[in-house]
Length: 159
Image (cartoon, rainbow, N blue to C red; front, top):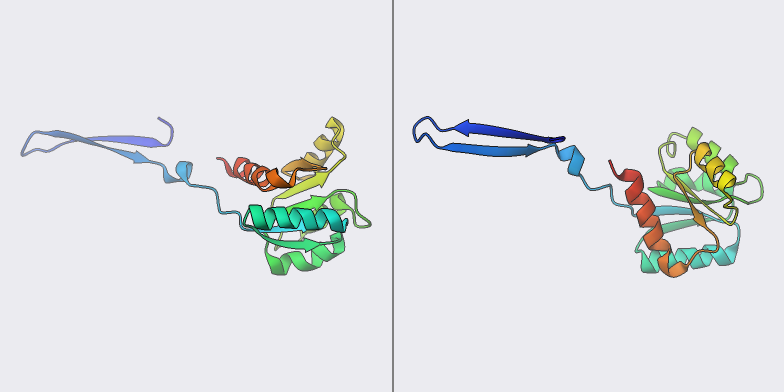
């Protein structure tokens, strides 16, 4: 059995058999709790809707940035658990921002999800090659955005 050890013992005085099961705790740990999300989006309306959805429906703490350069400034101090990153923004765009975030010690291990309307198969494959863990399609449903983010988070942390 992967992750489990079965131990059989016999008590010498009573001659009774007993057993214990030891489970590898690492295999059954819950993923870390997702609480802090950095949302990078240059469109103010989308930013506002996403922020409301993630905070009010999802209960997350959200730091919203309007550009890649703003995200690069604020991410280290905010310490996000997850970054939601628009692909098409004025320079630096999403892919360039992801590259810069991956070079920063404070965010190098922070998972990034691209948020974009550009979702043809080759585009999504390219985003994943760049290091994104998933892609959320625009337009997104604000009522299900928090659940979608949690689904991605749990899948990313599933052993």
